[in-house]
Image (cartoon, rainbow, N blue to C red; front, side, top):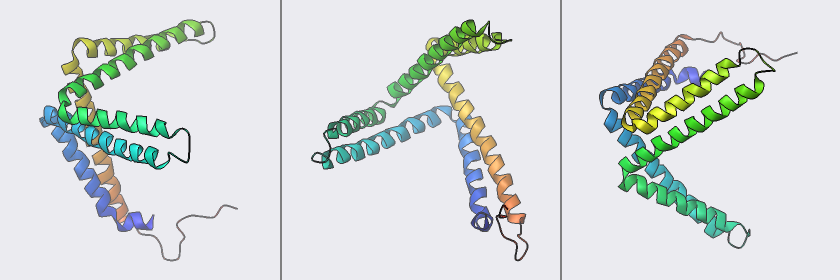
Length: 188
């Protein structure tokens, strides 16, 4: 806690940066989406190189060294694809989210049907399943609108997160520990 109170300004700075990112998502959603895909590409590429290196350095240590090598090559491929074709990767990501939402919705509906004799108000689970399937269908039918909505959700989260960090930072700034008081009270 003392390092947090001493560095309250860094907490505030993180909040300001989060708010700036959130506002960027609202003002330039296309740029935000592109940057996120490019960041993923850089990460996947770097992670893939590390995984390949791990696999190659453990050839003599384990018979499963090839798993790291394969994982790394897939990561490198995904990273290169994201850097060369960011639009295609963004559409693929939206398709993956759509498939996840539809499958999740189907499982929620199946669970609601099975649980109808065991719990009351299982229709809430049924409705959540229908909502998930509807969200997935919307992403399939209108991927650009789905991508924009995801960026807006991310932007909203970033702004709210930033506000909370700024409030925390200023609360930390104003927090003074009484002299001689421990930060953590020992339990008996």
